[in-house]
Image 1 (cartoon, rainbow, N blue to C red):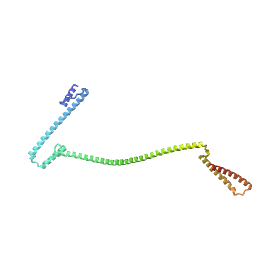
Image 2: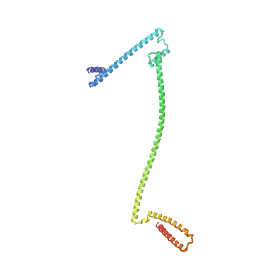
Image 3: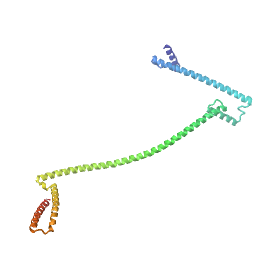
Image 4: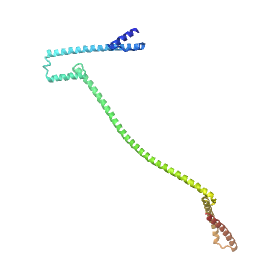
Length: 273
């Protein structure tokens, strides 16, 4: 535990430098966490140092290789920066720029071809991705057009529904007003009927003069008229015969009496109507 604390204190002193180390609670958990951070930081520093040394070594190798190539060109071929024409210098500069853009180690064909192939593959993948995205974009545009049409139709339906709702609201209000009028009229008629019934009761009106009684008497008179028709049909055959005067007279007198009774009853019913 003491070893961890001393290592953590040493690491914190290196991290904060001249600034004071912030106060923290010293317990097993915080010490373990800080100790792990210190180890990770030291490991990362070692990796960074190794990478820096490797880069320095590669830079020195590149410089040595460049010096060797410059000596070869100057001594073996007789080329120098002053002896190279401007177009050749421009070509070399472009070659170097391309090499730096491609990220190759040198400008040999063996280095350029894989880099160019990789870029070509990436370009093909990007073109493939672009075609896929264009298909998706066309599909989205088609869906968007359909959605806009549906939205327009829905908006029209909503407007129609709002208009119909306003019309129905006006009609409902009119119905309510008519209903109130009908209720008030029905109440008024009921009150008038009650007053009329009270007046009829106060005047001792005969029930036989009511509409219902008159209708019933009319129905009875119609029934009696229907009963007279068979009796007349019975008398009709005797009207053409020449019966014996006494028997015929008796039958005639009986028929006359029945006919007179029926006529009297019919006349009474008509007078009551």
